[in-house]
Length: 289
Ligand SMILES: [Zn+2]
Image (cartoon, rainbow, N blue to C red; front, side, top):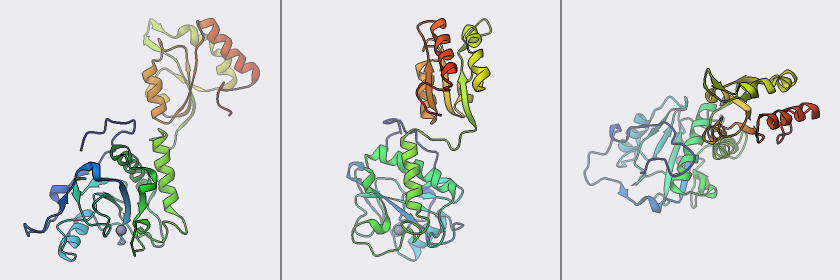
């Protein structure tokens, strides 16, 4: 598979354990291979056993009891949110009877008959699926629970998928959030006001002074570090792209921040914009909060 550089969703961290897992020792009992272009669906499963049962034990069961060449799933999402790749995407493994040729199997460890996956599983699993959709060009209508696939008679991925707590909805909300660029979890800062800085002798001193009226009124967290601003739900960038760059602005948006840039043609115009907001009692020009 190509590296995850074809779209804006970064590749999630996962451990590749394909070659470590138990396999059939019959050389004729091997899974078929496919071209990645054949893939059109992502199928969500549960292991239907306690979440302490890991990928190794599931692989062993699939090989020894089911007689399969290896584990049926492509990805395994543990209860703590860690992810393992358990088959190559080119492998036509056994997870959804009759529909394996064109589908990728993602399993969440646990039995979701009465409970739902952990928040970490939803968060990391949703990121993985959003990334797979991007890389494999799978549309949202082809991301399905096992029982929603054609011709299946199974409760997988558990009764809580479409009923009760509906973890289908939790997962799809997370997928949507990742697609919207909200990768990290909850933000710890409400509003960060970001000023540019190059050196102790060359920084946004004028903007800093001009913003005092605004700061006094709205009391945002103020500073010069993009990495800190990424922790904020809202970021006001003060000044043009010659200061805080367009790339840094993109980085903030990718981190899920709602970003507004206040930049006049010069520092006086920027000050006027800030003072107008104060006069209007508005923290932002474009956001209603
Ligand atoms: Zn299943």
